[in-house]
Image (cartoon, rainbow over all chains, first blue to last red; front, top):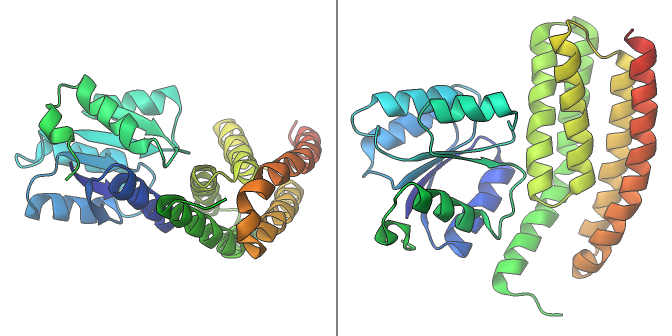
Length: 133
Length: 147
């Protein structure tokens, strides 16, 4: 899968990158905040998935998701939140904005890719999308 | 016991995270100082954001007691903020002291990376005991300070 990882914390970026690329075999592009993510998503080849942190400077994950869903280019790209904001109302808010799933931090680097693939499958992703890049 | 390349890569990241704990602690101290000086909502938001990030990242790196202590502060701040109340300086200082102890204990893991896996579990058990004492002290202080 071609994944856009949006995360402002460098230590999380580092471990998620190892997890997604080395464990899952996915092709990962990184954005350090929501604003950068919107720019990358608009100017790159479409991503199979956008993995989005919530609490970020510049533009938070909820607002970023809202804007991704408003853009013709990115409105169909699945969004999954990867966040420590795990209150029920926060999860509901994320889903109401069009995200297909919610992964709670802390996450297990060895199983992150499997969790993502499960969410993608449950939303009808075809097996070829789920293949390592 | 030999490590796979992937395990070695993750171990290197964990060691690097431990080495960065001191600077995270420093950021926390600065955020607490900022609160003491300004008492502004912005300063509280800054500390809340740092605690939230620390809870998520340290847990992902398997530093569970550190994650739990950061989550505790985050939750307490949220709870009392919702009631229009704030944690006192002595609560923040006690929490910082506890965090300092926890982080300095983790640093021993970085000194002997070859023993990381065998020592980590044992260290978490010891840190849980330390955190339990700190947590009950914090809850007591919070109870006294916030009616």
